[in-house]
Amino acid sequence: MQNTGKKTIFTTVSIDKETGGLVDRISKRYSLKKSEVVKLAFRYIDKASINPAEAPESVKSELSKINKRQDDIIRFIRNYEEEQLNPMIRATNSIAVRFDGIVKALETLILSQLEKSQAKYNTVLQKVSDTLTQHADVINEQGKQIGSLLKLQKKNNAKLLKLISLYADLAACGVMDGKRRENLKTEIMNLINEP
Image (tube, rainbow, N blue to C red; front, side, top):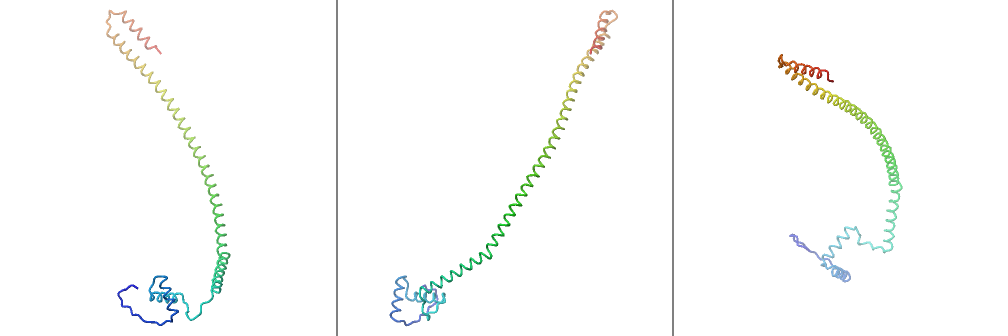
């Protein structure tokens, strides 16, 4: 025994030789002191609520009591299973089946809505694409027209510069350069009439 700081008061109990021999055998078997064997035995008797005055029953009767208790427990479990668990399992299964049906219906609905939405989006995108293509065609056509006008403008500007140059030469010609003057007038007329 451990010394816990309290002073332990021991008392003596008288037992017959047979009981003393039993205490010796148990203490040697489990490597305990005799006082520990007695102490532990009394704790066990107290904890298990065993009446030491009653004779122990036979092993057969004890086993039949245990078997009866097991049978009672098994009956209780089966009864609980039949009255409580099986209905809960059936209800849970029913709920799971309904839930599965609802999920599949929702999945089908969502997929059909997505397909409709996709078709609408594709139609809208196609219209936008067609409109943008038309605008691009118009812009390209206008770009070509602007390019043509730009070429024509450049040609006309060059023509105008040439005319200005010819008129300047014509103005610079004196009275004596009649032939040159006639050539410049013809050149100016040709340039004006040129398409």
